[in-house]
Image (cartoon, rainbow, N blue to C red):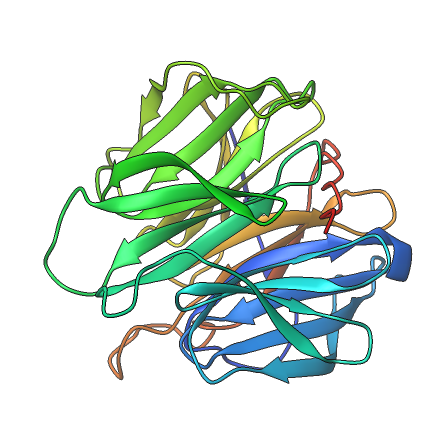
Length: 289
């Protein structure tokens, strides 16, 4: 098993950094600060691993996730709705996912191999087992799961025929067959359970293995689809939240972290980190509006 250490990549501190996304057409990195309600953009220096913030989009609600279309437009998961941001910055509500008054918010999201956007929710009260994972099919919202504790990271196999999804509070990474052509899914089965810390954001590499951010242990875990631990990347920030492959060769891991209260240990909590991967990542599909 390999163990490496990530390095802080930018000076800014985020309350709840999440959801990094690499946009290769524009050599642009996107990520969110959920509680601040901000979508950030930045430039990655692949040689040094440093990230320079270049733009920000501020919303009046929490922002759980962002994805990008081939032309550069964005889809943003606000607290309860999905919003399109066009190239002029105009915003249009695409769909409401959560009903008014529901004590939940949208959380992590990702684009499937055919360009559809998936996003899940988490509770903001003590309810358990009522959160959803949904997919935006055109203008229609299709519910894939409705019994989750905290819907989180999403990733697909290299062939696009298996969907992996994280349920953080239970520690489970689920797997199911997935048909990219029509979005049909098979039976959801437990791929593995994380017993130390909690699984959070996730991505996949070109060999079909998973990179899972561990909320609580301050690291990203490199695991096989059955859960075998191949290696870790330590951040020193206990609340490591998500990860993606970035850079021209997709061999730089960008890692987000969070600050949880004034007693958070470690000066690097809430910062972005980068690390060199020994295997390239899978390119992220563009969202198709």
